[in-house]
Length: 400
Image (cartoon, rainbow, N blue to C red; front, side):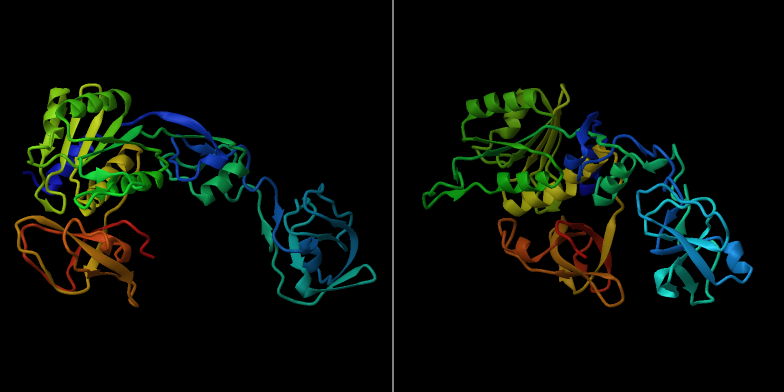
């Protein structure tokens, strides 16, 4: 049995760059940029008006002029209109390109316009006001969004602005989720009194879907030959195999032996933690990684967030900072294991992340996952944990 940090180190060493692919903007949200997005022109591409009003030459204002003849009205998208004399102005709208003969915008709220004469009714006018200067955000050729950025609505906005209709993103691994056991029935079946419905596979599939991975599902009954045959096909056909169940010490837990028979090198089996102690991890010579999680629902759920998702993020070039929270109440855990305690994390009035412990009924208790939002990782070297102490958390829902 190895320590949690050892298990993490072994898994992180197996991070894989799966290359890149191109996706269209409508399908890019949540993916990770593989290359920089580059500005195809200055941003903004012209001196852009930021308020509806009039465009004037500030030198006329400085000379004492407060009344301006409206030469024309310019709409956004129209060609810039020049001022012929300094006693003229252009009625101009937000988003317009400003002609070089004007350098100041006075907003409508500070004007009175009658008989084609605009009178400025404030003395608070500064040269260059209400203008977003050409290239102020980014010059032509500059990096608009760097590689290894998660594509969200803001990135899509910038990509569309610079004309990047197709984005190069990190390719995602192909994944199959395998459940085992004769006690499991599908969700649309009526189980016998001694059976339960399969839930872990759908839970893991839902977690992966949040990362845009469309994982396949497979169930293998408790049969030694079937286990080896079907796992062999999975290893050949996918980048990653995630197993749920069949990795403990029972007589019908055929998975570890089958994986060894198929040439999967065991990198570790059993981690000094609760839940999830029977966790098995290995690698095939062709590069396929096998994450074999325990069958208990909370165990599999925790292992996905503590081990698989950090591996996936590292593989994609993301380097997420650890998040810590303050323990909101005393807690105790006696076994000499790293304890992943279910907690409800919130932000208090002082802006601190507070983690309140929630008691559960073991690694088969799914109900707490509805009301909690994170696991707090408590070190194996301690038994008593006190309010006010700070530990790392692994969030599985939005906290703020």
